[in-house]
Length: 475
Image (cartoon, rainbow, N blue to C red):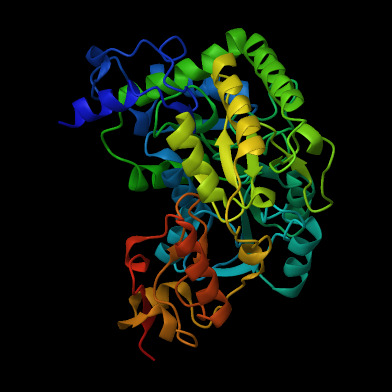
């Protein structure tokens, strides 16, 4: 039975350097009772027409986050992203979209038949092989080149903790009368307490979507949508949330969101003070690492990049390339030998996701494991692909939704160069498409996909196996 398997996993002793942010600590989670698994009965309000206890809880959240209106989301950040796009845009509207957005953004573009103009984050020149921040000047250049841009959507912070200059981008959007939507799923903790940069709400975004289960202490699927200012209709957002979100919202999830917010209101200063001390101690203890690098940590604590505006140090981005270890190999080693489960891994790096709910023991285990790996392990031939993913930029040939609606055929990956993709190809996590429907498949992209497969990265199933295939548009 599933319950038995889950219980066995929990008892295995594996430490969770991954979401959800509560890290399975019962002393952090709300004392959720199955008796609270209610429906919209008299006296307990209705999420889609809230004017009682749920509205009070959401208004309290908006005060804490500094928004003008906040909505609880029980279908994760995904439903918030879809509702935000639908509330602000109509079919055929032109938007600026950061190319490293989550797949849910692309699904919204497809569903709403939007016309995306992509803005690319620069590659960070390091062993990590990650995207940097979206440059405000890149957004402005696109605004000046393309007429009738109705909205800008980007991700900040990224899966790796990279934060963009939301204030500068917000100012640009306001000058051009465009709505700024920020997918801040990984940044609900930003801007409240010492040690972390400001988040998108305080930086002037019009709509901000956050996952309360990623970096706060709420249960999975809990999220929030914040409206800031008067440029977006709260009624329109509510209308579309009723479309994209379940009509039977979980009171357990909503209770968990409220508990997480109120916990931070009452004891957030102390929780985050301890969190920062743990991060500081960890950074000091990994200074002696030679072959393993951690972004903005240890020896790299002050080694930034002009391509990164700001960084969330709660994300431990770890590279073992100097040791001959791909990110996937490093993550597998930590799990198998040290019983440490990381959040995700890619070609050059792996990510340990931390939160204020992590323990001293957890940080100590990771520190000891990395120091031991640094002294004893040596990989065979690392996949030195530090610029591979950011440098692949497939050209859009036809509109995304038209490619999805077109007749398709399956092609062997090796023979697909020059064809137009009819599907998304992405590693999950983080869920950023390497290619989207309507984009041209190139030899460079094929080579990257092959390297990802060889590294053990978790690509979608049809691209696994000895003869991976890809869906292409029949021209």
